[in-house]
Length: 154
Image (cartoon, one colour):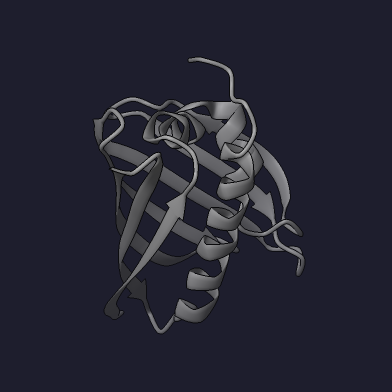
């Protein structure tokens, strides 16, 4: 039984306002469109309760047939400023990692500067840092496309 600790940080600048970028995180339909980091994953269940103490659940079948389970809990939500959540990930019934993620939003001219910091504890020899960074980056690329469109008010 072991835990290895690491972290990474990604920054993005969006042409959209902080309000628009925030809505893409807060609106369940918008978040589902851009957030899934593995398009090839077969989602079985996805729910989000965007409030402090609320959960975001994603159950899927990986390409190799193993079930994947991701459980997020929102720890802090400061509208248009910050989201902090923790999540655990398992595949095939094996715990892989636990993370604490802080997402910060700041006005940047007519746009938004967003910083995402993830602190990870990899469990029992699991290590997918390069893939985790790549998947998160791909999601943020889709977020950029999402906020370029009009989003419904929430």
